[in-house]
Amino acid sequence: MSGVTRETQYRFEIPESLRKIERASLIVGVLGAVACIVGGFVEPAQHFLRSYLIGYMFWLGVSLGCMGVLMVAHVTSANWGFVIRRVLEAGALNVFMMALLFIPVLFGIPKLYLWADANAVANDKVLQHQHIYLNTGGFVFRAILYFVIWCLIAYLLNRWSWNQDEPPERDYRLRFQNLSAVGILLYVFTMTFASIDWVMSLDPHWRSTIFGFYIEVGQGLLAFCFAIVMMALLIGHKPLSDVITTEHVHDLGKLMFAAVILWAYMGFSQGLIYWAANLPEEISWYVNRTNGAWWIVGLILLFGHFFVPFLILLGQEFKRRPGAIAVVALWLMLMRWVDLYWLIIPNFPDTKGVFSFSWVNIASTLGIGGLWMVLFFFNLKARPLLPLHDPTLRDLAEEAHAHGD
Figure (cartoon, rainbow, N blue to C red):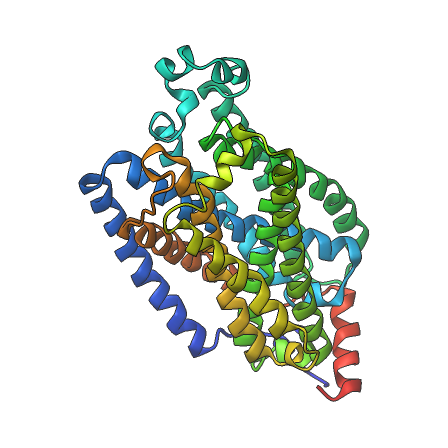
């Protein structure tokens, strides 16, 4: 290896397959954004904002999920986390863009949230009781606080990782672990309240103590799915091909499998509690999602989000094949979107028990997603795909060489 520096050995040149995805993302993002603008004018404001919230929560979930999984990987010093670290960092860094894209939700507060309607509050004792927390000023203040915390964590995780691209070799493991240990607690705490503010309060008469965890598990699942798809696209190209082994692929497959089971457990536990309590003001949330064609959406989630992936991912050898688990990961990302659609849309008076779908649902998700992917690729290309002077890189290279992968 004389004359070959680590910088040249692990240089990352984006493969043509990803360049095509990047170009397609830009086209989809621009067209989707234009369609969203058109939808904002031709669709009723309430309908547009509902659709926008679905797409927004989906892509925010990818960003925050990447940040959460990245912190878990740092705390555990997991090798599977190192090989996808730059993917997770680039995804987490997109939280800055998501902070800007939250502005339409802020302007749409009166159209989205019943608790923001003064007349509704004046005639509803429940809303009056909740007003000390559910009010526009508190909503905006908390949103700013959430994004400040998330952006700070994402920036520090990226900043320190970038520093490892410059010699000499430095071990930031303890620094990453300390930040991540605190960051995980902050993420769980802030996302719990954010899920209450942005999604659960769409129906202020319903409450769930497990809802925040349900959303957070869904975000973690989204991140694992996204990372697996990107890994499958990059695994045949340098420098990832020099360090990744089938064990890393298997580990990521097992983690995605575990996240599927945990999501189902959270959903089942929440439903079981309300079924046992049998209180009209609480069970109505489920009634709204089982009447009309909504019960079909529920069945799609039951089988498409749990039973089918569960049975497929049971096999050990299947989880060791990057292309195969990437297909399942893409399917689960679609199911995550369906789940958010099922959580958000039936909260409104005109959709309770009445199935509703709008083309803006798709346009908003594609528009935000296309722009999200463009920024993701920009972040990913801005630095080497692997931290060049992290001691873990040397260890993984030696391990991959020993395994012959």
